[in-house]
Image (tube, rainbow, N blue to C red):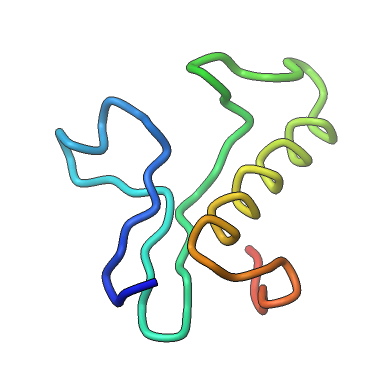
Length: 77
């Protein structure tokens, strides 16, 4: 993908505030904070383990949408 390309999540705040799920920066894809929210609804309420899995799946989806694979991930916080 081209430098500065944004990977969007479909959230209403993207156009209003300039949010993007991820942005391509040179050879890197920078992914924003992800939560266990899908379609505006929190998934797995009360289960932190399953929520974390959902959030990681969303983040990895953004990485893949930007043209990289999970093996390219070098830092998670």
